[in-house]
Amino acid sequence: MKKLYIPPTLALFLLSPAIGELLSGSSPPLEFFNPFAFFFMASLYGSGAIIMRELKIRWKKDFRALLLFGAAYGILEEGLMVKSFFDPQWVDLGILGTFGRWAEVNWVWAEMLTIYHAVFTITIPIALVELCYPDRKDERWAGKRLFTSLTVLISAVTVIGFLFLTPYRPPPVQYALTVVAMSLFIYAAYKLPRKEKTKTKGKVGDAKILFFLGVTGSSTFFMLFWAGPAFIDSPIIIMLLGLALILGLQKIYSRYDWSSPSSALSRFAAVAGALSFMICLAFILEFQYTGMSLVGIATMVGLWLLKRRIRRTG
Image 1 (spheres, rainbow, N blue to C red):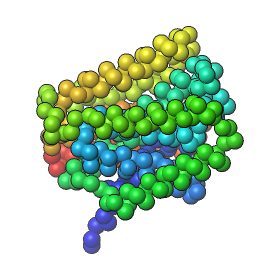
Image 2: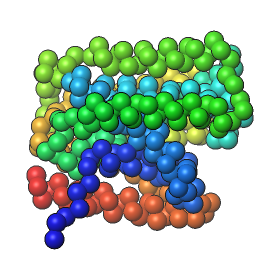
Image 3: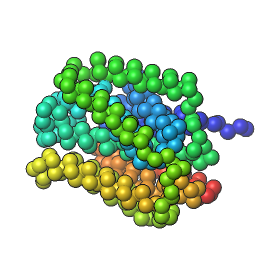
Image 4: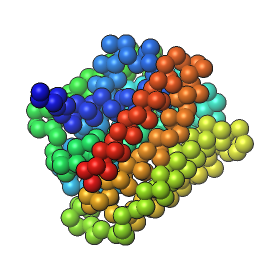
């Protein structure tokens, strides 16, 4: 019997919203699996992840560019579509609706969500799907027609979200600068050296160390922005610490070789470590949202199966 083949584009189209919205608890199971909501989120997250990966492959860039592309996506979603960068009444803001708000911008929230989407919505789903399709890791997954269709789709979803998701309308100047910021992130990614011009540095990282870095980095990130304002009465310090965290981790990861086939287990360990905080959080969120523990279990099983596959084929 012929095995069912799932194209990597479809896998990425579904995995990005599953991590970015479902596993995080932003859209718990009863909300996430609503057909209309699911299509809307997949059209946004999935299209964004595929488009950003295609730019990375076509421009021959490494994971640093992927983080910059992911930051641009975060600005598109949170700044241009849902407008949470500006709306003081956005449902998920909590204390960040007032802490760090200046010139009608939620600055601490904006930095947190930009980093979050860069890492968890774009980079991690792409890394996982590439691990599932190692023979196609360096190939284009979307032709010109699909790329254009996804660009139209994400543009349409962005406009619909802007018009109908909330009645809030951002100040024109701040909104225009948000478009500029998104464009600058894409331009910065484009200007990075091409992969063939970048010499491999260091060696393949130890999986246990990279798993620990992933756990520590993601835990520090979430606790800094969630609990930090209760202990550090300075939005600027919170933002500087957040920037230092992401730049420091990027500097550490840049020391390792991520391109060789032997680095597959190391890449998996880094990703699994980063997701561990969210997996643990899913079990806690079960007290608030029914089904989150099943999401956590499904994620652990999926990661375990992927690790077995990497060890068997590697």
